[in-house]
Picture 1 (cartoon, rainbow, N blue to C red):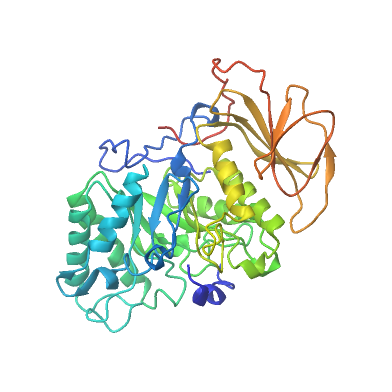
Picture 2 (tube, rainbow, N blue to C red):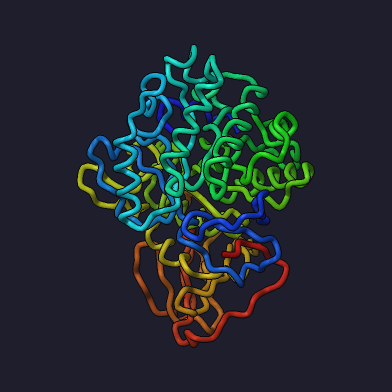
Length: 442
């Protein structure tokens, strides 16, 4: 997402599991098999739940210092878009992308999603339209999937067609692109997953068809069908952004998308959140509020059954900023991102994030085997705090600045999550699984 398009997006706008249609096992290093019958407590949260964007590496921005398990190849200046990679028909410029994928791999990141977008000027009348000759798109997909087979593990058909910055074609043309991506990629790399374009999801409660969202899920399924994609992709930016974005508000969008999918008979397919943050920093200028957003969003999205969420963007100095590119130092939000990664990666969520008496709680068993409870107050853009006395088993709590404190009676909680931990618990006993909850299995 770029600064120029943000104003266009202001007014626009669980996960159950899937089995790939060809029934082939996905490689462990490149994809996850998602099964609907497993409870939250039976599945560890993978590092791939934490996806990342880096916008300015080509301009000298350092490689991210925070940890992440998956990367989206979009808005990486000069090296990922179709028009960057195929400079004229059949002439490819792969060098920068080759180098960056090698860099990701050297840091242990092998789970990579590529997003199609921006038709080259030589191929069509506009970057936001399909090519004049559809064979040009087929040839590009084939060249890309052949070169990066086993390296690019997921393919997203188009970025945000609901924004005229990226798409001005018809729904029928978009459905043709979906068919092209699916059939071409699967013929070359059956282990890769193919995703929908980034679809719109309504922020109006009960809008099951997502009729109030441009290029909504219901309209796309009607035009495209439901058999030529593995994953449904959304961008879960809170709406309305200008009101002060709280991540929990996107629960309505998730519910509407799931309802639409269930109505179309594809409720078992997963939803990925391939781009999100608080958006423009001007919408959320307070570093305290930014810290709160980072901590709450990853916990909440996983609880809602969203197995992937890609932060936008690590080094973008206008939106979702996690690092000061001038100094290389993490912002407070960047520090918070690293802390919530440490809390969640390898942990299991034993109870979904739930709101009761103005307090959110999410139960976890950490990677070290310790029971834990994430807690925050249901306020946002506020300095309000409230005394909270955790269950007696918890003896320490951690904050999003990386501090650890002993529990001694009541603790002041606010908009920023804290993590209570029982450090005396055995690290060898397996956690008992709750009932009635779903998430990913690996």
